[in-house]
Image 1 (cartoon, rainbow, N blue to C red):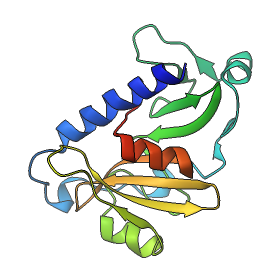
Image 2: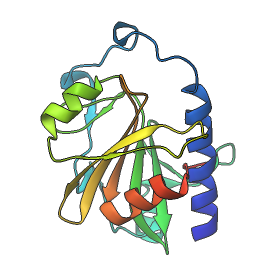
Image 3: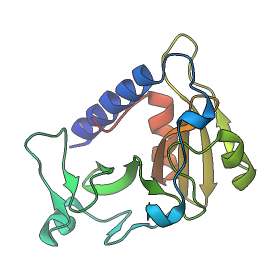
Image 4: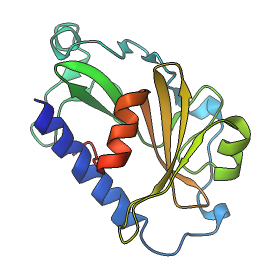
Length: 176
């Protein structure tokens, strides 16, 4: 199970990196949506899904569905979220537009705004010679948001356990 999830993570990060490997577009070409248009993911999880939940429990409750045409299980009603499980426990949620953090950060938010809202976030540099995004790791206890960015705007958001978010960044994985 762990290998499948990290393979899933590696493929999505690679796809995100390739998509972001060109020249960054002007900030105005990637509008951030207001929180009212998004679903909020906090550091406990999202509606009906909490970090630490088991695959079995989420499946039993009908929240987690195995999808034949995807690279892993999907959360019912949350198409813009990819769950990452390690040892049968939910450790990360890989978020895409239109998901939001409680303070309104979405894919497309300016990096300067993330730094303003999370002044203690740790800057993470992508390894030289790769097509991966740089990151900002905003920790709160054992949980964190990992904001992957192109230097101008947020391109991907990962929420969950800080240890796994950092490991995801360091090892270069994606949810596919």
